[in-house]
Image (cartoon, rainbow, N blue to C red):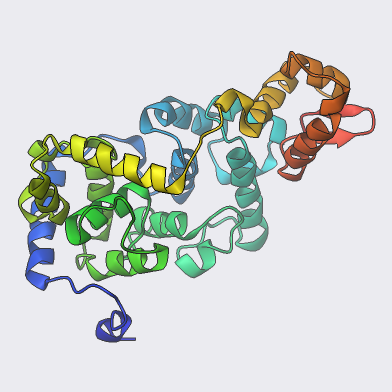
Amino acid sequence: MSKQSLFSSFPYQIAPELVVQVHRFLLRWYSAEQRDLPWRTTNDPYAILVSEIMLQQTQVDRVLPKYQQFLTTFPTLADLAQASTADVISVWVPLGYNRRAVNLQSIARQVIAEYDGRIPDTIDELIKLKGIGRYTAGAIACFAYHKQVATVDTNIRRVLHRVFLGLELPEPKLNDADMLTLAEQVLPTGEAYNWNQAIMDLGATICISSNPQCNRCPLQQTCRAYMEMGQYSLFPSGTVLRQLRKVAEKKADYQQQPFTSTNRYFRGRVIDLLRTIPTGQRVSLVDLGIQIKPTFNQDDLPWLRKLVDGLAKDGLLDCADEGVCLP
């Protein structure tokens, strides 16, 4: 399929001259300002897989020490595949979203069983692995195998939207599929690795969600969102974005439940408690409920059972009539 036909239905036309300018400014900035991150010093697909799974919904500063510890404990894909799930979860703590650790081990076992221990190098094969979506598949193909592919995470989406389309609030102008099309359209030939890393760095350090540092941005003069915000005459730019975000949240009538009342919070409490129990020893549901929730009573048992069943389904614990324990 030709590039022209690939973008024939794309709802926005991006001027080629603008794309060339953005390439030049951003890649030059990245060459001088790129973050020193350990997963950028390796082409080992396993190490890059570990970093990408850890970085899902977790900030870089929290991942850095855990990344090194995890690779020291499980230095190869085979080591991870052969370990007990309880040990994998134990090393993962306290990154949160412990299901990611179970998925990571499942990926390792799947690669050993189906790919002779070699992590695939194409997006089509990578997305067949449990727990790997289009972004992670693209990141591994690009960062481990230097394939010339585009990929879109939260930071890339925000930067591309602001630079080429304008403000993403109160509503984004593109859905996920069209955003990936945009990312493919503006991908510089032969520079996918540096380009994708550069956009993520810009989104993590300057073009941040609530208070972008537009005065430091190398793309200020080419950014459509910056020009739009200038029309409001309400700089710093974070002021505009905060006002627009309030409009969007009010429109959605969004009310956030306190975190300490969420199932995610109690899932974490269950795993933390079971980590303190000797291996193989089980805890009854009633004892578990009392220890994770001070107000626990018999009426909470159906809720706890559903919570525990969900953890068991995710591979995070083992559930039997006599109680629960880590797998």
